Every structure is written in C-alpha cells, then in structure tokens.
Length: 335
Image (cartoon, rainbow, N blue to C red):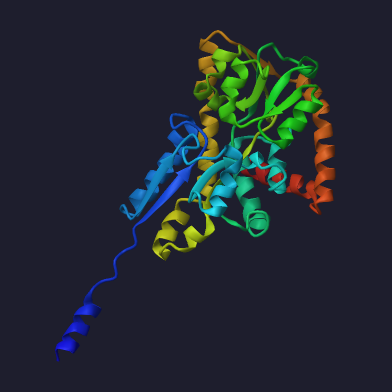
C-alpha cells in the first residue's frame, strides 16, 4: 500500500520546465548600433516571450575569444550558441550569398534582406548552411568610401591602400585601381591611425563606433544602387537548437526569419543618417557621385561581375540565375 502511495506521489510531481542559457557572441563593441538596436533588443524579446526560461548572455568584441573570421566555426562547434557575423569573413565558404555583395546590385537594405532570406530558404538552407540553424539574414545600408583624400572618380582610387570587408569588396577595390587590404571591422581604427590603409569601405552607421570621421575627412557615397553591401547572418548551433523544448524553439522561430531579417537590415540602414550627419557636423567633405558619373563607376566595376560569374561556374553554381532571382525579388519588394 505504501508503495502504491509512493508511486502515486511520484507521478504527481510535474516535469520541471527547461531553463536555458545561450551565449550570443559578436565582434562589435556593445555600444555600436547593431548590438544596441538589433541584437540586444532581439535577445530581450526572446527572454520576455519565454518568461525568463531562456536567458541570453551577450558577449561583445569577441569576448569569448578568437577572431571575427572564426565566428561561424564557433557556432558550428558550440564555442558560442549564437553568433552574428559577416558571411564574407570566411571567403568562398558561402558563395551564393555573394550575389548581394556585387557592385551596384543593392537597391535598399530592406529589399535586399528580404530577397536574401527568401533565397536562403529556397536554396542555401540545406546546402551551404546545412551545419547551422540560421535565424536571420540581412545586409547593411549602402557601402561608402571613407578616405584620407577626396575620391570622385575611379581614377582617384589609383594607388590607395583600402580596407575591404569581404572577398568581393576587395576584388572591387582592385578593379578600381586601389590596393585592397582585408581586415575585420574592429581593426579599422588602428589601421587608419597608423597609415596601414588610406581608407576603408564601410556603411555610414558604423563610422561613429569606429571614430572614422575623426581619422579621415573625406567620404564618397553614391546615388541610386549601392556601390556594395555586405551580408550578415545570425546563426545558432544546430544541436543546441535541437536540444530545446519545442515551445522554446517556437519562441526563437517566432522572433526570427523573414520579418526579423527585414527589420534588422532596415534598422541598420536607418542608422546611416545620424552617422552621416555627425561627419557633416565635424566639417568633413561629403562627395556624392550622381547622374552619368555613376555609370563611370559601374563600367569600371563590370570585371567584378565577369570574374564572379566565372568563379561561380567553376563551383557548379549558375551565378546569372542568382543575379536574376535577387534582382526580381528586390524589385518585387520595392514595388
């Protein structure tokens, strides 16, 4: 009889809800726009929706160790549970994503981020990104040239040592006559201050955190389609995601995907304006390439397309089909 009572009591004990701590790792200082306006609010929403069952620890500036190019492997290997990173920091590993980095490809960050997620779901999810749980895909606003001398034409790029943020950005710089120097974003201030580079390609929004308007006084932007952009992913360790209770997985899924990708890209692009104004207020020179002058830059950058299409063909990827699909999806969003 006592045994029966004991069994009854045991079966009446509820299964304890799973509490989870996830480590979010990324390369920017915590005061930068991306963690402040995108990543940390996202983490806050996850924590609130789970009523505290999910806690997300935030590690900025590579505090868990390693370098920015190692972040993807950190997510795959479980060094971090979630990472945010530039896909181009691992050149050639995720080739299809490079379609959005082609020169004068992007219309605006929201349209490109939407297209990026749709193409990821269709053809990248189970191929290039099969080792990860991708939570969001987005791009930054229009890429800008920041330099220690005025740049108005491609000829002005000749001989400049310029930081490029990805493989394709470096190919573009080389075609424009500059000497590309690859390095992650956090290395830019020191490289500029020590003269390792004469300038850098980054969007406006991150210039404040890197103090770029204090280090160079010239900024070249483009009307219409962007000179370039970079692709990002918010990626999670697959086993860690699979280990979560289904209701916790749903909370993460409900706060990720297409809508969040568009929100993230748009938020990052919206931060360009205030950062640009700070450079204006500092008395810096803003050069805007417009009209027929843009075509000169497009003509100079055409070899980037030719080389990329040949490279994709060598990998068995139809690069032109990716270009056509990306453009169609961006145009559809803009309409």
